[in-house]
Image (cartoon, rainbow, N blue to C red):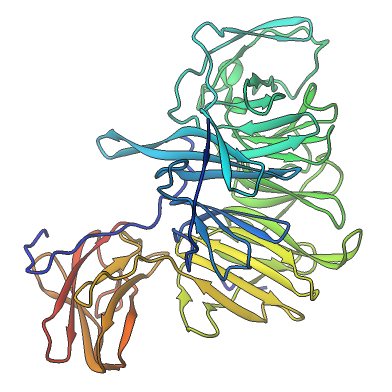
Length: 529
């Protein structure tokens, strides 16, 4: 089946506003109380994580944590609060009434290099009214060994927070588990006060148990091979099926424990007859209809690996691969029937090249249509889908929540396939005056996004918007003499192409808005592929 898949001085001062801090995917690279008011939208258009519990929608975004308790009508945004500051959210988790959020921010290493830095975790036992903060788990310099069964293993202390930020959070009855990239896999049995490093097999071993005699050092040395390779200590994803069965995804495959995280067996692209497609495991999900395991399996080091979605129906012994070539970020399910007696499940896959859906367990896939709000006609124009979750309403319809790098959407389905009522949530700062305008997201990448230009009209007017390059040469006329009624917020879209339909090169561009006979408005847009 076919997959539908510069600097100039202006009289008017313009401020570039960026509404997204994307979570990096390249692996090279106290208690306070809050008083919040309701916002109309989440604080960011980069929706990295979605978590739904007890009809509360939690979002992990580039601009922090957002929450809605009324199905998206209003939002509580924690960005720039005393607890969360300006941190982004890299992971969300929920267990027994407690919501957990991991925070991070980007750091400039110089020379154009950007990396990620973990800033800790926060948890709330009262639905986000108050929070307890935990610093990013690190080791002391003297933490150079770990006891594992009959072995005392050497261990390289992870003392820095650079590249040490939490990608995934899992829970068993007596422990919290975190996968923190360079920080590895850790667990806490005292609600985050202390953390213990968890021993996984090194790259050259397919399994370990406490009675084995082992001789290796726990350390992250990504990119090496043979006995000195420890990509399996660079952890990205956790799936806890029950208190005993735990799956952990790393840059070297999928690790499974059936005794609560003590013994482990590793599945990778080379050690099975029907293996996963790639060893870089970004995320994992459990299909509760048939208890199958689904994983976002990306190419890691070997040229024989490839991006795909991998599924196991026998606990990891064998795998089937779907959507070859697609780099999936999250996999979720729309269940058919009632909880406890499901009769089927649709598979939903948010990928870097679209949102796909299968009703036949992966045999064929259909991409989502263009997402357009039924009331406002606002659209989400991007191919980068980051997250997807479903929620069964009391009327037995299902909400499909979709996170992208350019906005949030909700589809309410009763019957059908990609049919129902669409709602789009776009974060943007209100204009301070009728003479203000700005563009978002900014910078933007035309090969997977569009940029929206926001302005206002105090009365009905004929509007023309032109895009110009650094030398003020005309690149594209977005709209010309288009009639717009009086409105506090107008949105126009530029797809990053010139008048001949070609994507423009990287660089700084300017827009000019002519509103009737009034003074023109100016702004700046940065294009970055």
